[in-house]
Amino acid sequence: MDHGRIETDIRKLYATHGLDFIPDLIAQKTKEKIALPDLDWDFHRQQLIDLEAKMAAAFEATSLPQHRDEQAMNELLLGLRLASR
Image 1: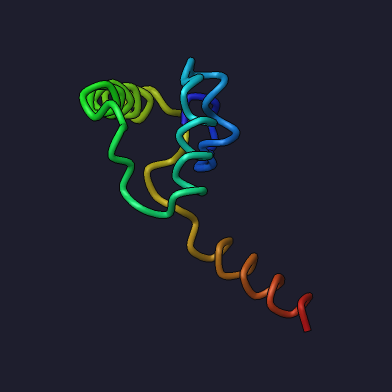
Image 2: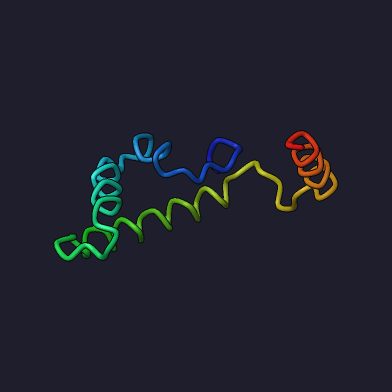
């Protein structure tokens, strides 16, 4: 949001936001497929709190529109569906 677009892929975001622990966390979770018993839950809980605060600040400062253009979205989806035939 802070760059005028929404990016949801944490693998693209972690480095620019100082979250250097993310690749290790992803690797652990991908390998284990279960809850991680040795995880430092307090550390990650605080990281979540910090990230939620950053997201709230980015939301307040974003230049993204509050409402989506539904017509443009429908046209985009229709075009993608037709192209995939």
